[in-house]
Each structure stands twice: as C-alpha cells, then as structure tokens.
Length: 202
Image 1 (cartoon, one colour):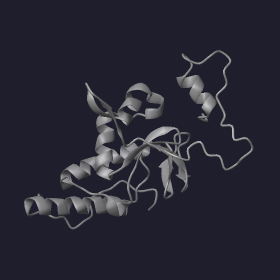
Image 2 (tube, rainbow, N blue to C red; image 1 turned 45 degrees about the horizontal axis):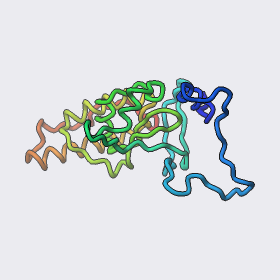
Image 3 (spheres, one colour; image 1 turned 135 degrees about the vertical axis):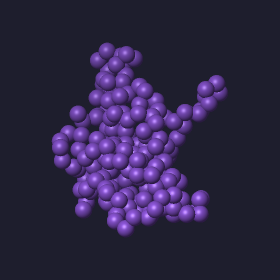
C-alpha cells in the first residue's frame, strides 16, 4: 500500500476529519524553491544504500542512498510518567507500522547495533550505524544469542541484511569486551569461526 497523505488521513484521522475534506497539498505559488520543512525538518535521508528482505515478496530490495526516513530516536517526556521512547507508542498503537516488533526486542537490537529506530518505507525498522562504529558490551555467549535473534529480525525485514564479516567483527568485539572486563575470555578459544547464518551479501 502506498502511504500517501490521503492514505494517512483516512487511516489515522478519519474520526476527526470533516466529511469530504481532502488531504492538504502544500501551496507554493509557482515557486519551486518553497520548502515547508526548511527549518526543523522532521525527516532525514539515508546516507548509504542498504539491502532489506522485502515485506511484499520473498526476495530482497535495495534502499538507495538519499531515501527519506522518519527518525524515532527520541523520547516523550511527561511530568507524571517520565520518559518513554516514541517508538514504543508506535508498537502499542500502530501495529501495521510496527511490523511485528516487541518493545524488549527492539531495545535489544538497538543496543546491539547502536542503531536508530525509524519509519522507513512505511514500517518501523532499526538502521545500524556503520559496522566499524558498533560497540559491544556483552559477553560472547550473550552476543551469539543476540545475533541469532538478529537473523530473525533480518528475515522479517525489520533490520537490514548484514554481511557475515560484520557479524564476526561483532563477536570479536564481544571477546575483546570479555578480556577488558574479566581479564580473559570466559570460555576456551576455538579455532573455527562460530557458525553463522549465510548472508545474502556473501
């Protein structure tokens, strides 16, 4: 479904919309330079291309550089209830946009990938930072469990496809984390690489 202004108005504003009212268009008086989001723009654009499992088919789709997205990496602040992430409201109130996310799962993936929650292509997703900027603060065993969970989110189109070399780098950072925190790896080293799900990039 193409998520136009008219679709949004019908889906989310139908109970307050005047009968027969059309979704507004920005009037620019013929001046192509007019930009309603010139200041405090609510959306951003992707800085690099990413590969995703498609919601519409069994294949994959490349999201090109410069694709608009709505970042959700901020909190609502209420004097009585404190802070709550805006993406939590998306999960609670708009399951069609949430695309199967649960709050704890999104929080785990956000931390694992140092990622940004966002609305991209009409769905709630996590965009990782570039692989060399991913910080790991869990043990190897815990990281392996998170990577297994990550593969499920990749398969559902909630996280972009990652290269196996990126996953191995994450595991290596987990090993370094163990050494820095505990003075040694927490289990005996193995000579073979840990098993990983095949990457669509490999």
